[in-house]
Amino acid sequence: MRIVFGTDSDNALTRAVLDALEERGHEVKQVAVGEEWPEVGRAVARAVVSGEAERGVVCCWTGTGVTIAANKVVGARAALCTDAATATGARRWNDANVLSFGLRLTSEDVAREMLDAFLSTEPDESELPTISRIEAQS
Image 1 (spheres, one colour):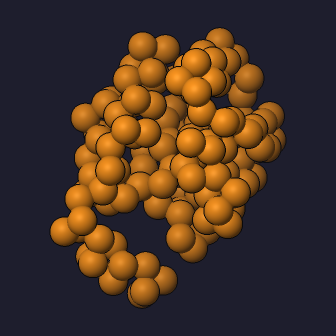
Image 2: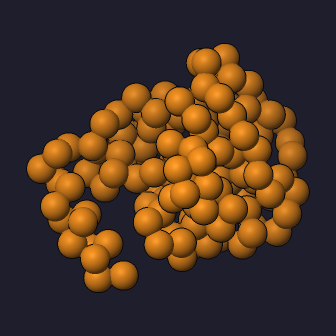
Protein backbone atom coordinates (compact mmCIF):
# COMPACT_ATOMS: atom_id res chain seq x y z
CA MET A 1 0.00 0.00 0.00
CA ARG A 2 1.17 3.57 -0.68
CA ILE A 3 1.32 5.49 2.58
CA VAL A 4 2.16 9.17 3.05
CA PHE A 5 3.66 10.11 6.41
CA GLY A 6 4.12 13.50 8.02
CA THR A 7 5.25 14.78 11.40
CA ASP A 8 6.41 18.03 12.86
CA SER A 9 9.07 16.21 14.89
CA ASP A 10 11.77 13.71 13.99
CA ASN A 11 12.24 11.47 17.03
CA ALA A 12 12.52 7.83 18.09
CA LEU A 13 8.76 7.25 17.80
CA THR A 14 8.43 8.73 14.32
CA ARG A 15 11.43 6.70 13.14
CA ALA A 16 9.85 3.56 14.66
CA VAL A 17 6.61 4.28 12.79
CA LEU A 18 8.49 4.64 9.50
CA ASP A 19 10.40 1.41 10.21
CA ALA A 20 7.16 -0.42 11.03
CA LEU A 21 5.53 0.72 7.80
CA GLU A 22 8.51 -0.29 5.70
CA GLU A 23 8.88 -3.65 7.52
CA ARG A 24 5.28 -4.41 6.57
CA GLY A 25 6.13 -3.83 2.92
CA HIS A 26 4.39 -0.50 2.43
CA GLU A 27 5.70 2.12 0.03
CA VAL A 28 6.21 5.17 2.26
CA LYS A 29 6.61 8.77 1.20
CA GLN A 30 7.43 11.41 3.77
CA VAL A 31 6.01 14.92 3.35
CA ALA A 32 6.39 18.12 5.36
CA VAL A 33 8.57 16.43 7.99
CA GLY A 34 9.81 19.05 10.43
CA GLU A 35 7.37 21.68 9.16
CA GLU A 36 4.83 23.29 11.48
CA TRP A 37 1.83 21.10 12.25
CA PRO A 38 -0.72 22.92 10.02
CA GLU A 39 1.40 22.28 6.94
CA VAL A 40 2.08 18.68 7.98
CA GLY A 41 -1.63 17.90 8.31
CA ARG A 42 -2.52 19.60 5.02
CA ALA A 43 0.33 17.98 3.07
CA VAL A 44 -0.58 14.47 4.17
CA ALA A 45 -4.29 15.01 3.51
CA ARG A 46 -3.66 16.49 0.06
CA ALA A 47 -1.50 13.51 -0.91
CA VAL A 48 -4.24 11.08 0.13
CA VAL A 49 -7.09 13.00 -1.49
CA SER A 50 -5.15 13.42 -4.75
CA GLY A 51 -4.54 9.67 -4.95
CA GLU A 52 -0.80 9.98 -4.51
CA ALA A 53 -1.21 7.68 -1.50
CA GLU A 54 -3.94 5.31 -0.39
CA ARG A 55 -3.72 6.28 3.26
CA GLY A 56 -1.93 8.78 5.43
CA VAL A 57 -0.31 8.78 8.84
CA VAL A 58 0.27 12.07 10.61
CA CYS A 59 1.41 13.09 14.07
CA CYS A 60 2.32 16.05 16.24
CA TRP A 61 2.76 16.54 19.99
CA THR A 62 -0.92 16.00 20.89
CA GLY A 63 -2.17 14.88 17.47
CA THR A 64 -5.00 17.39 17.63
CA GLY A 65 -3.49 20.08 15.42
CA VAL A 66 -2.54 17.82 12.54
CA THR A 67 -5.95 16.17 12.68
CA ILE A 68 -7.75 19.51 12.44
CA ALA A 69 -5.46 20.68 9.62
CA ALA A 70 -5.88 17.43 7.68
CA ASN A 71 -9.66 17.57 8.00
CA LYS A 72 -9.72 21.03 6.41
CA VAL A 73 -8.85 19.30 3.10
CA VAL A 74 -12.08 18.23 1.39
CA GLY A 75 -12.13 14.45 1.08
CA ALA A 76 -9.75 13.82 3.96
CA ARG A 77 -11.12 11.89 6.91
CA ALA A 78 -8.46 12.09 9.61
CA ALA A 79 -9.08 10.30 12.88
CA LEU A 80 -7.16 11.03 16.07
CA CYS A 81 -6.59 7.61 17.61
CA THR A 82 -5.16 6.45 20.91
CA ASP A 83 -5.26 2.68 20.50
CA ALA A 84 -5.90 -0.14 18.03
CA ALA A 85 -9.61 -0.38 18.82
CA THR A 86 -10.12 3.30 17.99
CA ALA A 87 -8.11 2.93 14.77
CA THR A 88 -10.21 -0.09 13.78
CA GLY A 89 -13.43 1.80 14.43
CA ALA A 90 -12.20 4.84 12.52
CA ARG A 91 -11.68 2.69 9.43
CA ARG A 92 -14.74 0.46 9.87
CA TRP A 93 -17.38 3.06 10.71
CA ASN A 94 -15.90 6.29 9.31
CA ASP A 95 -13.73 5.12 6.39
CA ALA A 96 -10.91 7.24 7.83
CA ASN A 97 -8.11 7.67 5.32
CA VAL A 98 -5.63 9.45 7.61
CA LEU A 99 -4.48 8.06 10.97
CA SER A 100 -3.49 10.77 13.44
CA PHE A 101 -1.88 10.32 16.81
CA GLY A 102 -0.04 12.29 19.44
CA LEU A 103 3.66 11.90 20.08
CA ARG A 104 3.36 12.83 23.75
CA LEU A 105 1.57 9.73 25.04
CA THR A 106 1.92 7.12 22.29
CA SER A 107 4.40 4.30 22.83
CA GLU A 108 6.11 2.49 19.97
CA ASP A 109 4.09 -0.66 20.71
CA VAL A 110 0.76 1.19 20.66
CA ALA A 111 1.76 3.02 17.46
CA ARG A 112 2.51 -0.32 15.77
CA GLU A 113 -0.82 -1.76 16.96
CA MET A 114 -2.70 1.28 15.62
CA LEU A 115 -0.90 1.03 12.27
CA ASP A 116 -1.77 -2.65 11.94
CA ALA A 117 -5.42 -2.01 12.81
CA PHE A 118 -5.75 1.06 10.58
CA LEU A 119 -4.09 -0.51 7.56
CA SER A 120 -5.81 -3.90 7.76
CA THR A 121 -9.41 -2.82 8.43
CA GLU A 122 -11.83 -2.20 5.59
CA PRO A 123 -14.87 0.07 5.92
CA ASP A 124 -18.28 -1.36 6.71
CA GLU A 125 -20.18 -0.97 3.43
CA SER A 126 -23.37 -0.09 5.29
CA GLU A 127 -21.70 3.04 6.71
CA LEU A 128 -20.54 4.45 3.35
CA PRO A 129 -23.85 6.18 2.42
CA THR A 130 -23.70 8.16 5.67
CA ILE A 131 -20.11 9.17 4.98
CA SER A 132 -21.05 10.23 1.43
CA ARG A 133 -23.91 12.41 2.74
CA ILE A 134 -21.56 14.16 5.15
CA GLU A 135 -18.99 14.81 2.42
CA ALA A 136 -21.70 16.16 0.10
CA GLN A 137 -22.52 18.80 2.71
CA SER A 138 -18.91 20.07 2.78
